[in-house]
Length: 64
Image 1 (tube, one colour):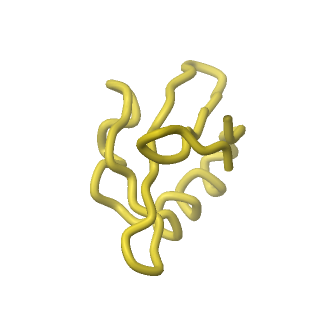
Image 2: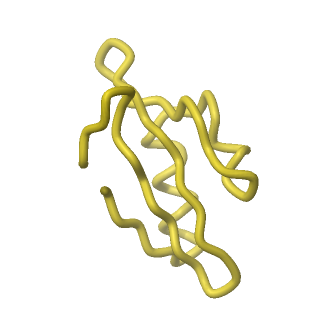
Image 3: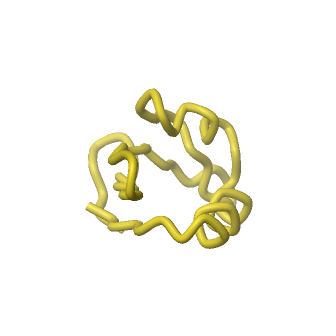
């Protein structure tokens, strides 16, 4: 993951879109704190939950 002043940026690419989300570590878990319009549903969700969904959809993730 690439760090910014506010967290780490996740770039998601799928056949129909490209969007980004910002993640921050809260305690021992990574949580989405901000996201673009397509990934807005991620906000407040833990990484393990989001990553399972992304994997099922076959979306590509790049950190940075």
